[in-house]
Image (cartoon, rainbow, N blue to C red; front, side):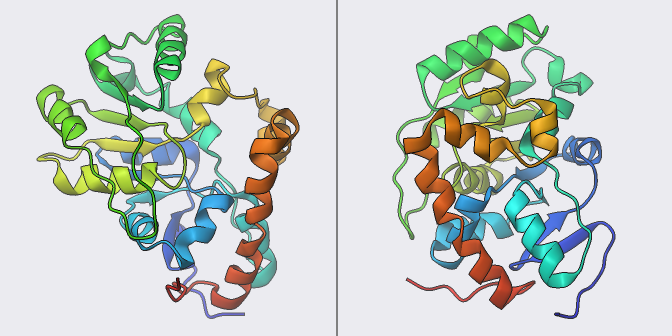
Length: 257
């Protein structure tokens, strides 16, 4: 077992500082501005091979323990008792934040027109009106181990509208570098929430995950049963997290090609 600095507010896992408070505490802290990351296990394994993704994780101000696999492995290897805070739980808390519900205070970055339309309608039913100017369809960003994600058009729109909250729902592995890019290049610091599929679980674009299933770490199973060809290979890839955590524990893994 490695020698840990048992800060009750965080743990350093694979070189990344993970926030250990509740979802409500994370939302309260994020309201002051900063980059909120919610890495799932299939993306987290890229910390050892993808320089851009790795640097984005290290730039996070609040990194949540969304990966149930990571939490279970960490607690086993380190005989610790950290708890999981899922992206879905965080999203539910965020939707209750008073300033979040004010028109014009959020800007949503989604992967498609369909996602934008569905998200906008669902938010409207929750009493959260989002102007069309605050809904952005992300282009197909380039990917690769050393490809920097950048979007000057998005940057310009945010500077013009200056929302307090920016929601990135474009998927793990891409949204984190984009969030880090926005944090670095904006002239002010909004709350940048990399929520991935969390909003889709609520709008119906993704398979619904009941509260009980999320609490018992079964979200991955429901997604796999719903779309096995899409998610089974992805979650199989997450098995590599076992070897990474067993070897590196709290240290940042060596970067390899």
